[in-house]
Image (cartoon, rainbow, N blue to C red; front, side, top):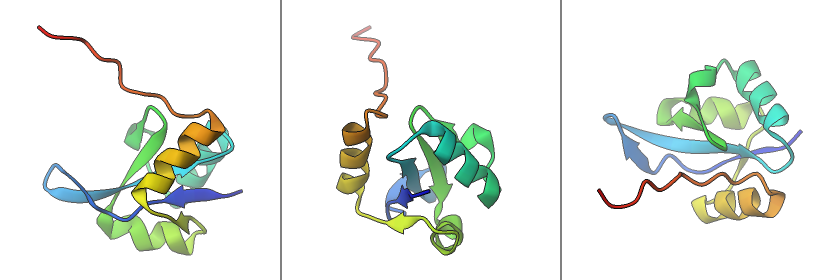
Length: 90
């Protein structure tokens, strides 16, 4: 099982966030997140949002540290990338 995490560089809700992804399956990703104690509500389309204070926990649990561009490349390469649906102009 290999999952990947990018540095906590993404702001939101007064915190910084990382993205936790798999390049194999969502099942693998969900299993890793569950072992880490990350709630399923943190899953967004194709990744888990991980707050900065949990980043070291994910790495200790075996997540491989990669850059943000690598996370996107891994998702596209695996076919697991799910883009946001665009609602168009209003």
